[in-house]
Image (cartoon, rainbow, N blue to C red; front, side):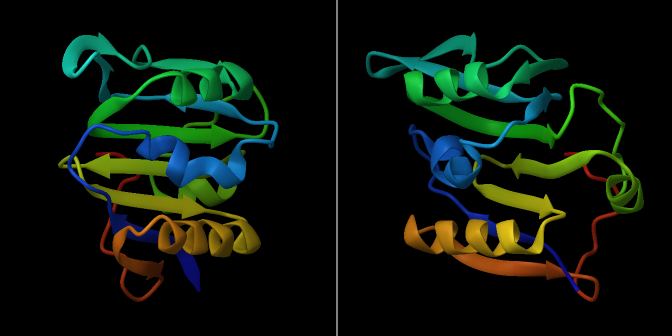
Length: 153
């Protein structure tokens, strides 16, 4: 069974979160911003301002306004998309399956993206989005190859 996908993004400034998550932009979601270091770019320099405050929840429209409003540099992130404003903690894959969390997006080491998604159709769309954006080393995460024990960085 396909659980998610993993791939690599470039280690540069950009709008990679909006590139990755574009298929979700019209959905009614609530985003849990866990621990993350995503810094905004001002002019041609990296600022010390985070794109989102840590440990907060944000509705879909303000989330997208920030993603599309400026360039940023991702060091690591832990973002979770929920179907309701009630946030169930999803720290393991089993927790994720039982929760109202619809998608987990983890980025580590500036480039390694891991996405878990409950909806098989949406997972396929996200996989094709990664291909269309030219990301590298795109692979499905399955029951057989998933070594992750916790859904966090």
